[in-house]
Amino acid sequence: MAQRFWVETLGCPKNSVDSDKVTGRLLADGYLPADAPGDADLVVVNTCAFIEEARQESIDTILTLSDARRDGAEVVVTGCMAERYGAELADALPEVDRVVGFGGPIAGDQTGWVPVSIGTAPTATVPALDLLNMPRPAASAPWAYVKVAEGCDRKCGFCAIPSFRGPQRSRERFDVVAEAESLAASGVREIVLVAQDLASYGRDQGEGAKELVPLLDELSSVVDRLRLLYLYPSELTDDLIDAICRTGVPYFDLSLQHVSRPLVRRMRRWGSGERYLERIHAIREREPDAAFRSNFIVGYPGETEADHDALLAFVAEAQLDWCGFFRYSAEDGTYAVDLDGEVPDALVADRLFELRDLQDDITASRRDALVGRTVSVLVDEPGVGRSHREAPEIDGIITVPEHLAVGSIVDVEVVVAEGPEVHARLPTAVAAGADVTR
Image 1: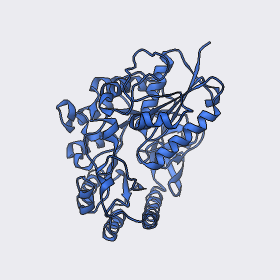
Image 2: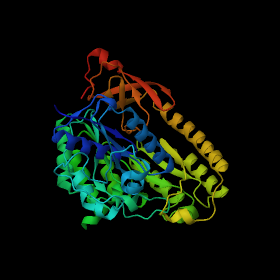
Image 3: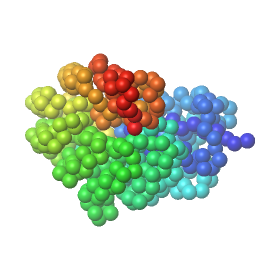
Image 4: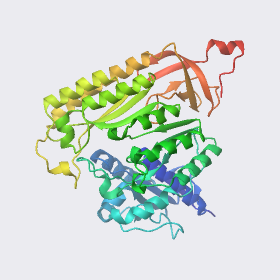
């Protein structure tokens, strides 16, 4: 009788791709998916280790699933925590049967897996790419993430990812396109490209960041919608901006982190609020309907009241559609962990509240501006759709009539906005027999 498995995924979309690959490998080896963790013979927890809150969530999840497993079931921990803290994690969690680094054997002696030493990111270079090029199961939604590279060459002061994900290794364009074609054949209509440093795709292959542009043009002929996440601002060239606009999804997810020039330098990053605004305005001149998302760190060592005021002013002027604000987390092995100028927790909390309150109003205003407009949505599930302005899982949604077919692309009219969520109906023209479904 075939054994059953359950994969629990924590963290970012990049982890979701890794979990899909793990699932594909297990299916190829004869395992069957379980209906619930408690029904599985093998429970895999794909962990996140980006910040302290994510690590605690990973540990809590491991313990919960371990307690709930049925007799004889195995619990395997993989992902970022396994790679970063492997041996330590194995010692601290006797409940776990196995801790496996990137590309390691999840179950038994799986062929095609390349074992790696726990906690040694440089040796994970080849296995991580092997994992990316493995087959994945058919998509269960009309959209899917596709990871085009692994690792990162940047040395941002707050980020430990290069220490356990390793340097950037881009996939061959042929492999990325082949995966996209397979997903499209299974009904996927929107592909969301992800990587630790997406705009630098191909640089490690000697082609430079411009290698991303021909990839976008090729993928645009494969699926109806192509969306990009995680763009480093210095790589946002005119050619790349034009290529993104050509995809029909003018959505710009910019990794900014802060806008005060002195603090950005202290973060060991490029740019300033002035430069960022320049690019945002230039994009809006090209494409007035462009949507923007970014994330910012609050409480980085040395952040002054003037730095915070600069960020408030930027958020007010930029009028981004979506914005996340996160408390600085001191990470072992990073440049920032030894910096002076710690910001008191209470002050960080005040700054977070102020920024989130401001952005909530901006997001609501930008959603209000959609009322009365006709927008094209991809129906993700009954009653739920997204236009080019909403990335799956992280942004708001557009509610639509429940009878619309999942996977269809439909023109709808926005009638009400409630914060990040907006409600739409079929246009009046449909009553006259017009076809708005594609």
